Length: 115
Image: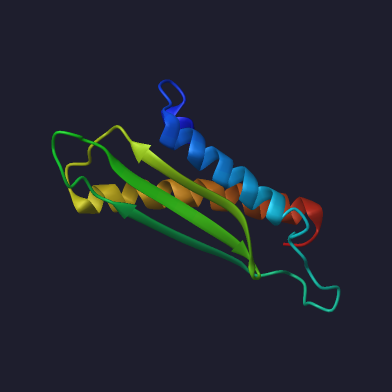
């Protein structure tokens, strides 16, 4: 929704109201980790990208998701203003962004004593 902050319209406001309804309905849902679980917790990373389909738009989208055991703890989905020269370069850029986040999360989990 932040993409439309500069010029919102009625459909964006309706979407925000829907998001708030979902947040209210799930306010008691949280991330739970069992004491019986094994340490260290398993950290899994997933990333993907969508290459530019239309050259008049000239942006691609990439994203990642990190799962700590069965709970998502970090995610990103972002439009990239730089168009890669090849699909290999685009995959490299997406994997680099994911790797940077992975290193940070592993260090954080190690500092917390769970990684």
